[in-house]
Amino acid sequence: MASLDDIGPGQDLRSYAPIGDGRTIALIGLRGQIDWMPIPGIDDLPIFGRLLDDDAGGCIELEPVEEYEVRRRYLPRTNVLVTTFTTASGTATVTDALVTGVAGRLPWAELARRVDGVTGEIAFRWRVQPGTSLKTAAPWHDRANDRSILRSGLTTIGVTGRDYGPEPAASADGIATGLAGGFTTAEGSRHLLIIVGTHDEPIHFPDPDNVDRGIDRTIEAWRAWSREFSYEGPWARDVQRSALMLKMLIHSPTGAIAAAATTSLPEDLTGGKNWDYRLAWVRDLAYTVDALIGFGLREETHAAISWLLRTIRRHGPELHVMYTLDGELDGHVTEYDVPGWRGVGPVVTGNPAREQVQLGVYGDLFAICRAYVEAGNALDVETGRMLSMYADKVCDAWRNPDSGMWELPEVRHYVSSKMGCWQALNDAVRLAELGQIPGSSERWAAEAFLVREWVDEHGWSESRGAYVMAQGSRDLDASVLLHSLSGFDRGERMSRTIDALTGELGEGPHLFRYTGMRDEEATFVACSFWRAAALVCVGRHDEGIAAMNELVASGNDVGMFAEMIDPDGGAFLGNLPQALSHLALIRAALTIRDLVGDDADAR
Image (tube, rainbow, N blue to C red; front, side, top):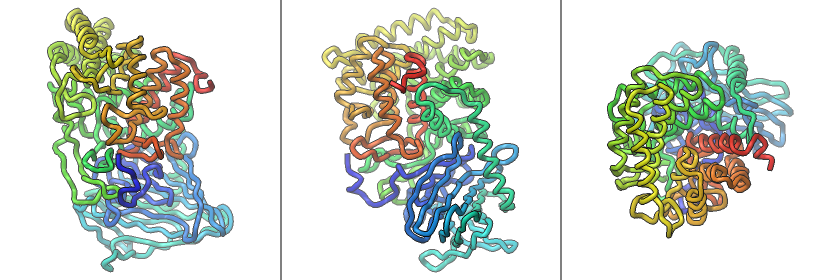
């Protein structure tokens, strides 16, 4: 894989801390800058998108004028970030929140930056510079009702605050397209910088005192949610932080979960493998529902499964790999003429994987429904009929090749896809036993047995000592580890597969996705956590716990994970925060707790 030293300058992806409001996410860097924030929704074009376009992407800046040191943390049990700036002349804190309203999410985006003087004095400078939304619009500065308004296309940005000193800010060609200003903190002082945004609708300028109270209300809202969160097992702090990261990715208007908050952050530094992950994968939703049920969270669980089932019925009978956050089919991939992060392109919206056949998605769907039912709930009649139809379809389709979990262009008989079909049929039988779905459970059980026979004959290589990637292949694939968790195999063969994967694809506790990826990508975070969980599933408790202890420490300073980690230097690659990475951490912790006990991380 190419080195970061071989490509252009750009922000270190480890430097970002996300904040969110259930509709969009802002990524805040170590200099107090916001280099990514789409408005109004997480899947819209980013009016603040310097992450992908250094020159014209747009940003929000807030930092001391003189040299400074930085410490930051989330307030406990919240997604509100506090950054402490220390200079030779003083100390001040910046509290960043995407503010929520009295009754929940606001109908506009409201970013509040509260600056409190702690000691001495610090001169701060700030700038709000809208971007071109991936070169689809041109920003300009407007005046209305004696207020400065920033516009770019149909997006409107308002800037207000308390003692914040605004002035129009000119772009390189001398035209005012942003706002800038400055102020000086003193011990006990408080300044507010407030950015509000709407799209294709009027703009509301909030009262700064209300926003000040709104920050505290947002803190309490996050803590109220965290009080409902129930987990007292191993790695509790890491699990809760991952749950809070996932909560930001849950699209509150619908209940869908975005696979990540960004698009086009490269998996391969040579370019080409840049995808939009601001879509809802059925796979991610399956793991999310499992986690939410384990945490005793009712509202998000019901909203997620209800959204998915409605969406599938609307776009059936085919079961698609992913849907938009609004429950539509992702139309097409659009490429934009912007340089990308560190010049690594392309920059795109949309994802081509929607058209693929991935048989493992049936296992994900049935896993969601089984987990929901076994938590004490019941399916409706139409869902029962739909699941019965899909179980029959799996009986007919499992013998066919597909694109596999990794959305590969080559259609083959991928072993983990067959295991996913086994999982779907096994869960269908269980749901029938519970009286939740009609149909021929005897047929489903018989076909599940045949799937297992196929995997035993075509998916296992004695010479490799492992389950292989596909029929007739000697390549290895870390996704088979998921089926230690599903229960397909927790015996000797899975244990030997772990050893083979570790030997060929492992770097310490980290794991590459499949054979050949060592030369193209960094290690895949989710695979590494799957390995830790699989070790415990096959009875190798001490090894799994040791790997887990190393892995939870490999996130960034605020506990965030991207899609990939370079095992040599720890650099992040891929989109972030990545739902699958945090879900894998949570699932591993829950699995180890259930099989080992609450004190597993103390070993």
